[in-house]
Amino acid sequence: MSFDLATRLAARRAEHLYRQRPLLQSPQGPEVVADGERLLAFCSNDYLGLANHPEVIQAMRAGAERWGVGGGASHLVIGHSSPHHELEEALAEFTGRPRALLFSTGYMANLAAVTALVGQGDTVLEDRLNHASLLDAGLLSGARFSRYLHSDAASLASRLAKAEGNTLVVSDGVFSMDGDLAPLPELVAEAKKAGAWLLVDDAHGFGPLGATGGGIVEHFGLNQDDVPVLVGTLGKAFGTAGAFVAGSEELIETLIQFARPYIYTTSQPPAVACATLKSLQLLRTEGWRREHLNRLIARFRQGAAEIGLSLMDSPTPIQPILIGDSQRALRLSARLKELGILVGAIRPPTVPAGTARLRVTLSAAHSEAHLERLLDALATAWAELAHG
Ligand code: PMP
Image 1: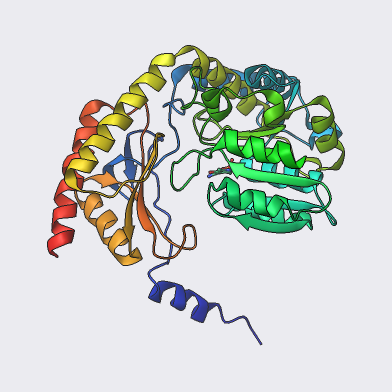
Image 2: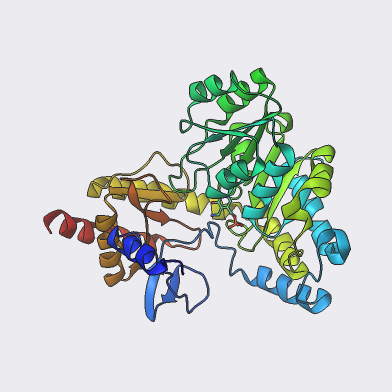
């Protein structure tokens, strides 16, 4: 007896949903070498262009020399070192919260926060387009799990009315495949009315959003107690790796005591924390990165609209072009690659059926000339697709 993996894989291929990993043979950046080709890339989450910043690289190098290359153990054993601690304090200050807790990945931070806060007899309510890690966390928690309509406060309210036990409302801040913002003031109001807690995963908001890069909470001018559980990731605008949960003293102590994805894993290499301390400083002080990025976003939306592309309601560096059919999305992505442009086609199950798209992401590392090359290639490829 054996698992029939070949049939499963063949079905995936037949549906045009087979995934392949491009092989990156250069550092991350606007101009990359992938699969042996020199390409202009519009698909990384390095929104502020910090992944290659010389000062961040130097901080990591110095950190490795001082602290070695591995975390060595879990935080609770002997893996919690001074750079981790210093970064937690800096992230708490950055988010205006009493405490922050560092994780090795955003996936784990989300699993940890949700599963430590709700369990059997409780309720977790999630936006239906939340990131997979949040949805997985809700299922794993054992709480009653329900998904409300995307960014729909009325749909959330009707579920809150039926909720039992401790209730956690969970939303992305910026939706990772659409680029739109959660209607946070409305979610805050509904959660407060129902006595529920709100968890916001602002993986894509920290850095690009808010006057000082403070993310969606800063963007909407909300208070700490409006969003008691705030998650951020460090592998996107921060340019490094890892994640954090920020909140009250009691919240962070609860995670340290009860969150299995925190307790049973090795801490991130301290040198990564050293690098992130530097990138946090740059994210806060080099406001020109955000301003340049916002100019690129505006120019992209104007140029794409002129071509007749179907954009989504996104003010963020995530600028998906809606195609619909998976095969067409793949064809467009392949043609762009021939024209020297790398943009990923995102297909179900990552996005709902019939909403395949090209996920264009912009970065402060892109120049205006890079953006014009993207728009020229899109105009060519789109015209060919329409006639082909
Ligand atoms: N949350 C969101 C909204 C994300 O987009 C991602 C990563 N794409 C994660 C969490 C997971 O973060 P990480 O990559 O650090 O595991």
